[in-house]
Image 1: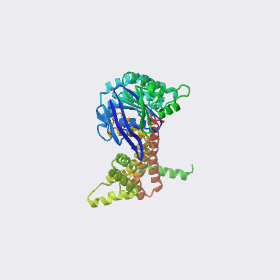
Image 2: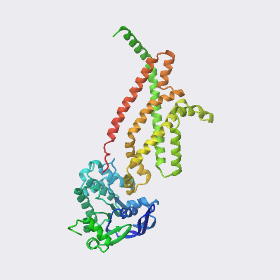
Image 3: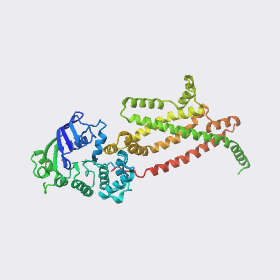
Image 4: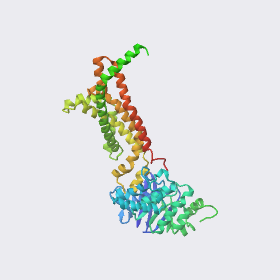
Length: 246
Length: 230
């Protein structure tokens, strides 16, 4: 379980997050939506300590998230992350990327790590690409390797920071398919996304952020189909195709 | 071919045969000085770069100051200082040791700046990806950032090696018997300046050109597996 309590974060004079509280239960999929600059990525990055925060608390699976505390490294093994721009290690093959964490951070035996990494690449549909370097993979393939790399740490939860925003449209589906599978298997996920279809179909809960505040929060059937708040209505009108609506 | 030219060519060859064994002995010392001082300077330079990019503010400042001071001094002055001045405070080094240490320190600052630029050129996303799988800074540097930084730094790294091979001749000024020094000694006793320095120049080229070639190959080979940003 991840609990965010009254979080406040400033960048200089600018307050990016104002009094944000959110609880994500184990096995739950929560999608964070909102316009750019609303603070959703920052909120996500606070959860595994890639950003500091100024006030409030984040507790993830029993330990407080504190960027400067040595406990942060163990916490990051518990809460994985998938980035918008994949950030695969370019000097290592797909298989080595997946093995890196368990082998060097967790210091598990190599033969076991290799077997598990191969199984994970197979799970994301890339068993045949284990010796490929990232620059020879498509964006969708790279992002699937990145998901396998996060899974290799056997995390309790995974944070997804706009995982399909850097992809060509025809490659979005393959990444979302992997994420759907994870959700179905009960992985705890917080997903910053602009994919409303995915949010509607997969999320247990959708949070709409605007200007550093969670303006509206609820099941996708409510937030996406029948938003109560004017800001949410306005946002959804702008990003959804005019004909379909939500 | 005129008989005159033929005669002087024959004389050159005869002289060359007499001088070459001495010059080759010097060449061995040149290579020793280059390899040792290059290794020392690269290690010191890497340490300086890591300190400079670290969050330890005072150490980082000190490393920056050291780099600026060393960069602001002529290498010959540094060599003289180490060889002639340090004995006054009880540090006695052989000419060879002083040469290796002096060249090593002088060149460490170029390595430091080169490595620092390489480290800073590695995408921030790489740091974050490494942190996100639980890596602490030393492992993050060793496994993720430095291998990529080194590839970025490699062309300049190779240039420094070639420059050091040539600048190892500077240690002749503190009596290290490397190739240039050997040439000077022969020239001053035989007055065959043309023969001696032509041979010295050819021998330097014989060492530096293959080095340039090998480095270029290495650059190309290490270039695989790293590429365009997604």
